[in-house]
Image 1 (cartoon, one colour):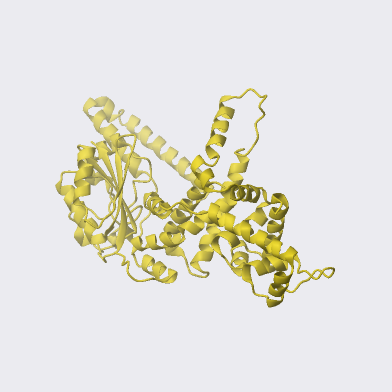
Image 2 (cartoon, rainbow over the protein chains, first blue to last red; image 1 turned 45 degrees about the horizontal axis):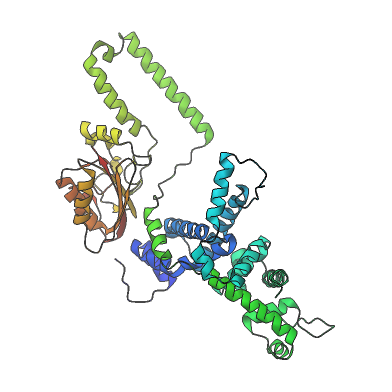
Length: 195
Length: 283
């Protein structure tokens, strides 16, 4: 089974996994699950959805790591998967109307009642609301309202300290495009929050 | 990086944003130190960054739950890609064969089961096995989920069917290996899925947990149909020993994939870790 004492590189962990040491995959999970979560959280703005995406990311990697050729860094590969799954989830949430507004005047069908219950469940829990101050809550709300292309770049920069080059590579964009998107996202936040 | 807005000498916002992240341009650093407007902008950027980082902190036990999800996920099984037109050809061929067999049976004097009621029961039992064996099969030099032998465990568990298979003829569920693979020990796949038919699911679950090595950290799922799914990572040798022990306890293994009880010679043990999924189904 896996040893726990030495600090292995990602490439060494992957090599050992390919040699049959399945349990060593847990080291990659310990190292990067939080990052996958943060990327997803930045895109989705929901803790539950972010955790679901983080789990999905690593389940997929767990299944396909044996076929990972190492053409790019493991982290770049993981970021791409996380971003794509988070985008898919975001589109899915949008298409099923998770964020739609329901008029108070309307008579509610059973489906709509369920949708309302779900909307209520998706609000931050009281504990979480207490944990974040008003400014942080407003920042997250306004980030959620940014155009997706701006939001993704800003989130990758902010929550994971990714370099501009890494973000450009992960999102398949030019470096200048990423710099511009991040700057525009920040300017939008400044305007909306009056900072 | 050095882009400036000509009118007031301040860096443009892209340059300022990049500088806020990298601090790489000494000229912008000097400007920001002297310009209250730019300092306010940069402070704003940094306050957003701090807020986002704090809001996006992952839960403390996230990694444990993600790892558990990895172990709980069903393993990939080999996929045979069959063109749509092939399905039509196969259905047509099957229909022709069924028609021809039916015609022959009737020409020769009707169904044997119709002549002998005792045979009707046997035919029903046989049909249950046939359902499991009629699927397309693929042989690859690995054993485990979907490997080594054709996998019969790709559908939801139907305990009544499993019980019937196990109590009629367990060996009948295992099609013979191709001649080219017979006698060659195989390396286990990373994932092995076994279905065991047991007398008492709860008692068997406890017995199984007690039989695991101390270092093993199993995950158990109790299903609504009262079957139990347990996942654990074991070295291939340990898995073979465990399977032997389960057989000794009187349980019936209905999955054909290696390792099989008492068949150590067919396993090329390398000490590799295997994710072992066990379904315990009541008899």
